Length: 173
Image (cartoon, rainbow, N blue to C red; front, side, top):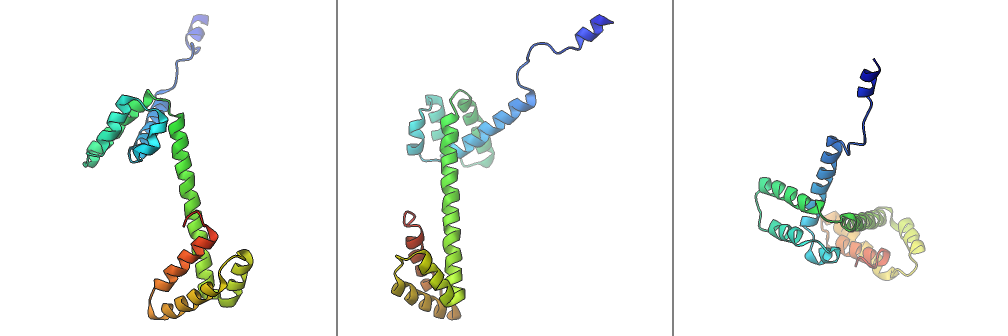
C-alpha cells in the first residue's frame, strides 16, 4: 500500500503548464502585432536581432489578414529569443502617452462644451483656472461659436477648441 501512495506524490518541478506556455505565446503574439506597426526609429534602440528585424520589415508587404495572423506568430517566435522587457516598456510608454492625450482631449472638450453652454459663469471659472488666457480672443471666439451654432457652422467651435488646447495643454499644440 505504501508503494501506491509514493506513486502519486509529485516529482520534481516539471516546468510551466501547457496553458501557461500558451498564455505566454499569446502575449508574445500581441506584442508582435503591436510592434509590427511601430516606426523603425522607435525600435532601433531595442537592439533586436536580425531575424526579428527581417520579420518586422516583411510585415509591411503582407496584405491578407490570414497571412498577417501567421506572420505575427512568426514574429512572436523571433521574440521568444529576444529580451522582451524593453519592448514591453516601450509599448507601455506609448499606451500611457495615448491615455494622457485622450484625457487631455476630453478635458479640453468638456471646457469647450461648458463655455459654449454655461456662458459667463463658465468663462469666469475658466479664467480663474487659467489666468494667462487671452480674454478678448476667448470672448470673441465664444460669441462667434455661439452664433455659428444656431446656423450649424463649426469653424469657430474648432478655432475655440484649438485656442483652449493651446492654453490648457501647450505641449499638445
